[in-house]
Length: 178
Ligand code: NAP
Image (cartoon, rainbow, N blue to C red):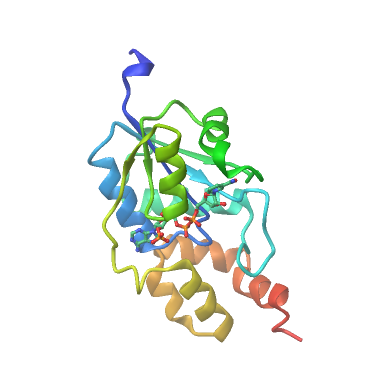
């Protein structure tokens, strides 16, 4: 096997938490490349309103979601990457953490611009029910005590969040349990 000939894409996201839209993106990319690198961004942050889950918890959620949807784990890397203060060199910095890749996968305009400016090709997935599948919406529903957030994530992810008492944590860090 010549490892350099393997076509890889990197899909960065905060995955706070991973939802069914992300999963559709993952399935979509995997029809186009040999291997997919899921880069868990903002890996340094947890226990905040916008980033409640640790990088390790997000690794577990993503892995469980991929297993639930029978996605071939031998073709996937899940790698946490902390943020840096210098956007312009972020793609080069990302290279240090992940295997060599050809494509950056994103809809996020900043992320697309940074990949393009660094000479990478990009893959832009279609919006998979973007209004419905959103981590921001999921966190809002959790805070409201609305159980319908569970319909927006794989059931394995809902189970991990229950196990780690993720909703209670989110309410605590938001100050809503006072
Ligand atoms: P995210 O909200 O988890 O989303 C990840 C990607 O999935 C985005 O491109 C998003 O596009 C797409 N997506 C989400 N739901 C979708 C759906 N239903 N259908 C189709 N696409 C969907 O994460 P993000 O905030 O974009 O994550 C980027 C990560 O890279 C962050 O951790 C950021 O800090 C990191 N980063 C770091 C630096 C630095 O360190 N200087 C620089 C750049 C990026 P949209 O949300 O745009 O639709």
